[in-house]
Image (cartoon, helix red, strand yellow):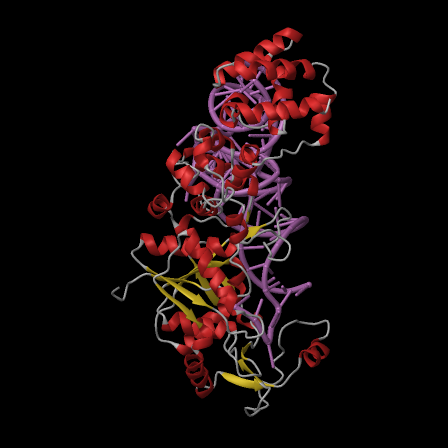
Length: 461
RNA sequence: GGCCCCAUCGUCUAGUGGCCUAGGACACCACCCUCUCAAGGUGGAGACACGGGUUCGAAUCCCGUUGGGGCUGCCA
């Protein structure tokens, strides 16, 4: 890939402290879309400067989830833990330019001094001329009076008074660089043209700008801060309290293209008014400038609806293909060919397929006690309906139409319409009052098993 | 507390000064279809946070208030 001066280069820069979650996934998606629609480069960079909190296995989990979603990256993954020399050079440059000073203040001391007053660092060590020593942090010296302006593609200019920016730490006492520093150095070195990230990073952006000015003559990257994804209480989604892992959604039977489509319209909407777009349509229509300003609630109910819609729109072949892994290992789907389309119409998640077909494969059916008593035991007509059906089922043709006629007649005999008459049969055979169309199910189940289950039910009366 | 962001139906949004008696989608309710359950169809209820301006005219522009959120770590 050629690197011209005007090449669009974006990056997704997660810190590997957990599974990829939906908020990060949306950030990744928007970056990916922006790269794809501009013939740009999508870089993956793992921000693992904090040895205490990062774990190797997480970055594998993150790349796997990205891959599953279809958000392939062009460069990387780069790992910040492998780029310390680069940061060292940057740090030396800042020191040489007089942009920094060492600081030995502890959090306790600082709190004591600033007690009740302004939070943030008070500049105590600014002019103490401390020498480098193990355990001392290195701070960036915020000088000047000009306001720092973040020019945001989504929000316009955001102005920060320089006096409101503290002398922030850029290197820890253990000599590790801190997030802002490594972040800026990498963005600069990787020639990132657009920084598209969550709004929670907006307050640290002026610090990044200050560092950029001191470290590079290159033009600033463009910024775009995305609105947060929130829970029902309107708080930023959190790994701890909210169900946010992409992997969890994958494991509960959501389709990756649906998750991408849904994430895309959380904070942005297509001009043509459609709701669910495929990735290639998103690439065509997405517009970073038109991203909303306000936070959005991640609504699983709506996501589930879209998932069902997508499942229903699949060709039969695709649906069967997608079902693999979601049904029992030894379940022969050829046994239920006619039922498959009926299943497809009724599930909104792939995980719902197996429960719906379970009665076809499990030798023993379980009947919920309430269901049993309501539909059979406490139903005065159940016995006669079941007996009549059992009798007819011995000899009749075994196709859904005939079976329907039998149950219809059984109902007639006791003055019940088909809707009521079918209930005891359904429960006796499938164990539930709700499920796939009954007569197709019986046809697929076969004469022997059907009769056996009805006999079994009658024996309990 | 300080700094910053945000504000249209319950939710996601359309809307960029007249096309708005505010449109769509999910959810909800009713009816239709129907062997159960879904799906589908039809209809319904449901919002411009508040107060000032600007303007012939404001959901749309400005200010304030209120409310929500984010950040405020030698985390990212």
